[in-house]
Image 1 (spheres, rainbow, N blue to C red):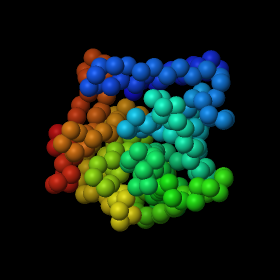
Image 2: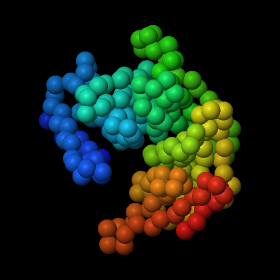
Image 3: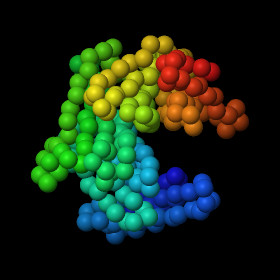
Length: 235
C-alpha cells in the first residue's frame, strides 16, 4: 500500500494486488467518504483482507480516533473513540467478522503497559461511548525511555510488537494473546543502532516475525528473524 497526503487538497491511496499485478487508486478530495469521515490527515496503520485501518490524531505520532475503510467497496466502519492518545494499533481479521479484534497500545506514566481491545460485539450501538476493553500489565516500562513500534504484527492468535529502549537501542518482543487476553514478554533481545522511526516489524512467509532496520538507501536494510516456535532471534 502506498499512501500520500496533500493537506487541504486531497489524499491518494494506492493499493496493489500482487497476484494480479493490478493497482487500485483511491483519490480523496475534501468531500467525505462517509458522513464526516475523510482521508485528509488520516494515517494508514494496517491493511488486511481488502480493509485499511486508518487513524487520526496528532500527525503520525499519536492515535485518538480509528476507522476502517474498504477502497474496493467504499465501506466505512467507525470505531468508538479511544479517549486517550495511543502509540500503535492493528487488527486481526476482517472487521465485519465477530472474531475480529482491534488493538491499541500505549505506555502511560506509572510503569505499565496499557492495551485496549475492541470487537464488533462491544455494544457499539452506544454512540460515542467507550466500548473498548482496557488491560494493564506491569513491567519495566518507562514512558520517557520505552518506545513501542508503530507496526504491530498479527500471527496465530497473538499480536506482536517491538519495544525499544531509547537509551541502549535494545529491542525486545512482546505478545498479546487474543484468546486468553494475556500479555507475554519474551526473553532475549537485539541491539539495533538505529532511530526507532526506521525500524519496521512484519510477518514472514512462514509465520515468523521479521524486524527490518533501514539505515540508508545506499547501505540497504538489515534483517532479523524472530522464530515464534523457539522464541529467539536469528540474524
